[in-house]
Image (cartoon, rainbow, N blue to C red; front, side, top):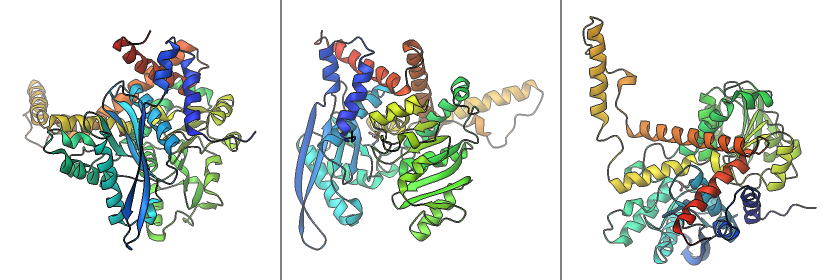
Length: 471
Ligand code: GLU
């Protein structure tokens, strides 16, 4: 049987597998599963050469059980109705899992990003924002986009600027989109948040001695051999932070090809090489692999797909050698491939958990915009003084002179970045514990994806139950 890739059907299958472990009414489960609204638009754009092109775009809002709905906007040729609907569903479950009080959404513009100039991309982004605003598909209280595959802070600043120009002095207008540059109302730490969250999630996983023992691995990230597919924002930062934690990068895949280096390679050196030559290939000390996807089958401990969906399929699942698959991308593993990996004892950290760091810090950015104050502004100096007072009192007890030296690192008051990172770390740690608790309650042969999904469905369903309209 050939495996048909229908992303929405994949997400629905994963939902159904988990829903069977819950006790919610079938009608309520149907409501939680379905995508509430999809807005399709097409609009003309003037290219730099004067020709006109018709662009197709979508925004899907999967669930309105909490508002606003939240999720990124991608620029890619893979974008279609089903893709945004599937990705919006994953956003609903991701937000619920990490207690970010939003419904799920996702948008997409069907373009090959590299074929457009900066000016053309700006016109596309601004027109897309205009269309969203016309239909109430963007706004601080209804639907808040963010970066995704092919977009970043630059696109978010075009979005917020267009929104501001249309919103007529709306007090919270800055909160209409997250992932903005810090100078445009963004928050420190958002850019690297998804990758940092991936690192925290992997660290949680590697800290559990029994799981590591079952996988015949040592406890901790230190020394683990890592392969990363995709050096975009998420893959790059995940690799960077895991390398800092002591992981050894033995393989990297990008669209132009892949390289392998069993003894490890240095991420920054590879990035510099790519900047210089335009490719990761021919990196000194590494071996080129004929196909980019070959990297997925490299001998390693941890494999991190950080590109697009549908990468681990029935075609390659049996050839994957990693003992841990960390889904930094959304939907990288098909349901049938997931079953093969599970059967082979591979530990899969599911996307709705592992890449939730991005939306978690988006939530902090949204809160910052609504409160109109930078985190840490009120208490930083107060904290520092209190810590310093304590240190001086201790010194006095010891008969030492209070020091007028620079405040030591541990006595500093918390800055925005400190608060963002600690909030993210706590979020990832708590969600991991909740998934493990669920696994224990359901029986330990339940996999992480099912346990995470059961937690997410439960949280969404309970919100609906509180509305009192479902049996
Ligand atoms: N696009 C990211 C994701 O898939 C972030 C979404 C957000 O911050 O709203 O989770």
